[in-house]
Amino acid sequence: MSAASSPTSELVSGAPRHVAIIMDGNGRWATQRGRPRLFGHHAGAKRVREIVEACPDFGVEYLTIFAFSTENWKRTQVEVAGLMSLFRRYIAKETRALKAEGVRVRFIGDRVRLDAKLIRLMTELEQETETNSRVNLTIALNYGGRDEVARATQRLAQDVASGLLDPDEIDEETLPRYLDTRVLPDPDLVIRTSGEARISNFLLWQSAYAEYEFIDTLWPDFSKAEFGALCASFGGRDRRFGGVKK
Ligand code: FPP
Image (cartoon, rainbow, N blue to C red):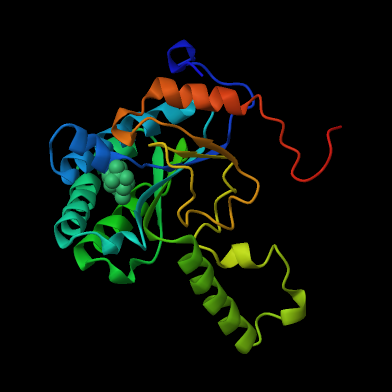
């Protein structure tokens, strides 16, 4: 698909309402330039603004981005500390613009392992943007799909134990009410940059019927034009959700 020929500022018919992105390739982007990996993460953070701002142009109401996984703690202490510092600075710096752009920000993931200052900034950003509705940006931070399902199951089991929930009434509508994403629609389109074709523990339950796009572009090179082309291509997909074509 040619990103150059895609629309960049017009509404796409049959647009994906919810796009989720695995922003991969920051490290390789930096290495190609002979720079440390954190240089790539900083470049990656700059792409986030442009893609968030592009959402209304392409009819995307919900954007969920994978910023840090439950497995990313395995990276070096320098990289983890650098990423945490980047998240703190990003929130402090972007709050005003996000508010002005009508972006509502939510975080998913387990906050227990995050430092107190970051948790405070996240909570404040959520509160300061809670009346916005132009774009719903969800940032997955210390997020893992399996961890989310495990935490949800724990809460569900507590409700069973306390008599609030009847085990016989548990069906596939029940668990989503306990997930971090309970207020979000399921993703329609999941994009992963950098040429890797795997899902890496991202939105496992929610993506059961998502369409996938694995593209070669490294995240710091991902552009509004390419995002628009992927949204447009989604409009041509034949989604049957396990049924047959009418
Ligand atoms: C994966 O690339 C990227 C990450 C683990 C971090 C994602 C973070 C950002 C894009 C920065 C900012 C985000 C926000 C919300 C401010 P990688 O490091 O695994 O790349 P590689 O596979 O080339 O090594």
